[in-house]
Image 1 (cartoon, rainbow, N blue to C red):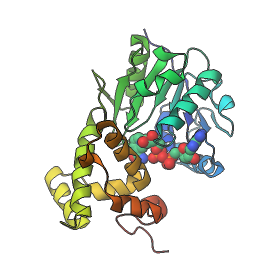
Image 2: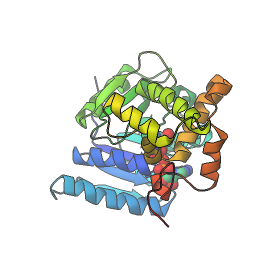
Image 3: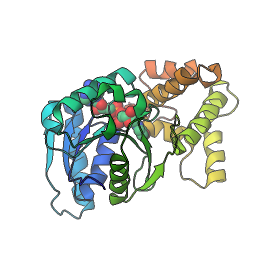
Length: 279
Ligand SMILES: NC(=O)c1ccc[n+]([C@@H]2O[C@H](COP(=O)([O-])OP(=O)(O)OC[C@H]3O[C@@H](n4cnc5c(N)ncnc54)[C@H](O)[C@@H]3O)[C@@H](O)[C@H]2O)c1
């Protein structure tokens, strides 16, 4: 048994909220956006224009933009939370969603490193929560980690899997809770070692990226990918691993924090490991 999904709400209409919403809109889902930042909602409108172009200008199902959370989730079947990687913030948001969304709605987090079991106490519908973790770019990295909380029902899990497949993605099923899910854990190991090579001045970022591209056949190296993701997002994720393990080897280098403090966040701020646009 699965629940029918027609309308999906994105709480947090930043980078990932928009990317996932574009795929969902293309595959005929109605979309709701909520963000505390009006600029993010404006950007989401531009993303929806891209979705329309990808659909060869065919009309999208209804898309609405909200500056209050309750109206953005009141008539939906699935909510995808994509706010910053801060456990307390995610818990607060889950509680708000739980109060306002219809009882049948599933609440999923796109968190990169926080198991939903650490968030589930914030809601009463503990059987209807999931980790749905996307990779970017979604069209070419079309895989989604899917993981249960401690009380997630089979119905919720199967609905999540079916929804992932319905937007042309492959579900990566986590059988037993694991920090980093399936592929993100592998990616964490790669990032951690690359950052150490860079912070220790052992090699240039270009050399590392070149090595990765030759070995893996992928078009982008890890430093290019981290710039795309956003260095603030990368830092928060790496800190989650460190906080979980307590292992000093997992702590991201201070040099990465220094870049973030200088506002060097990657592509979104024009400079990160690479310079994207001269000011
Ligand atoms: N960037 C990636 O490649 C990537 C990949 C997979 C998963 N994730 C995860 O997705 C989540 C979002 O990451 P992102 O890269 O989209 O970040 P982002 O900074 O681009 O977007 C976050 C959005 O949340 C909004 N926000 C902040 N507080 C809010 C609140 N209280 N209520 C509503 N909106 C709020 C911000 O205004 C922003 O628009 C994180 O948990 C991250 O770990 C990121």
